[in-house]
Amino acid sequence: MNRRSKTAGNAAAILLLLGSASPMIYAQADQTTGQADPSSANRTAPPPKSTAVGTSSSAIPAAGSQMAPSTNKIESSLYYWLNMAGRTQSQFRPLTASEKVKFYAKGLFGPVMFLSAASSAAVTQGLDVPPSWGQGTDGYFHRFGNYFAKNAVQRTLRLGGEELLHEDNRYFQSGEHGVGRRILYALKSSVMARGDNGRQHISISEIGSLAGSSFISRLWQPSTNSSAGDGATSFAIAMGVNAGTDVVREFLPDLTRLVFRHNQQVSANR
Image 1 (cartoon, rainbow, N blue to C red):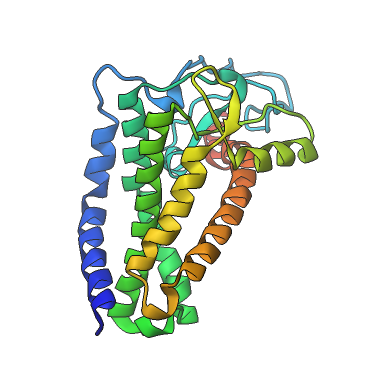
Image 2 (tube, rainbow, N blue to C red; image 1 turned 90 degrees about the vertical axis):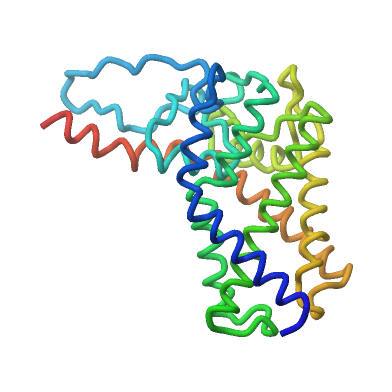
C-alpha cells in the first residue's frame, strides 16, 4: 500500500469516528444559546386549516409565497447539507458570525453528509474508480474518506471566504413564476453570493472553495489522479455539479412540502 493510500485510509477511519458522533454534534448545534436558526428566521404561524371540500395545505404553494420553516428533521438536514436557507430571496437577512459557524457545523456533521459520502463511495466502488484503491473494505474506506474530506475542505474554505468577504452563499428560492425563469435564476445563483445588503455578486468564496478543494484533494489521490490537469478537471466537474445542484435547490422545497407534510395532513383529516 503506497503512502497516499495509507493517508486516505487513516483519514477515512477518523471520519468514520466523526460519523458515529455526528448525531451528538448535530443536536448540539441546535442548542446555540441566543442565536436564531437560519432555517427558522422570520418564523410565521401556520395557516388555519381549511374546512372547504377539496382543499389541502399539502398542495404546492405559488413560487412567490412565504415559505414555512422546516420542522421535519430529514428535511432540515437536506437544507443544511445543500446549503439552503429554505426561504425565498425576498426573506433574506444576513447571518451573524456565530450563525454562519452553526450553519457550517450542521451541514458538515448532519447525517445527510455521511449518507452522501457513503453512497458516493459505494457507487465508485462498484465502478472501481480509481482502480488503484482496489476493492474490499480498504478500498471503500479510501473512497468514503475522499468524498467526505473533499466536501469538508470545500465547506471550510467557503466559510473562511464568506467571513472575510462578507458573502452569503446560502440558496434562497427565486420566488419567480415559471419553470424556465426559475431554472435561469438557479443557474445564475450557482456563481453568485449575496452581500449584507442582499444584492447578488460573483461569489469569490464559492468559486474559490470549489477550486481549492479540487486541487487540495490531489494530495491524497493516487498518483494516476494527482496532476494539475486532474485538479482542473475536478474543478470543472464541481462547477457543473454546483449549477445542477442549484436547480435541485430551487424546486426541492416544493417537493419536500409534498413528501414530508402529506402524511400529516392525511392524519389530521381522519
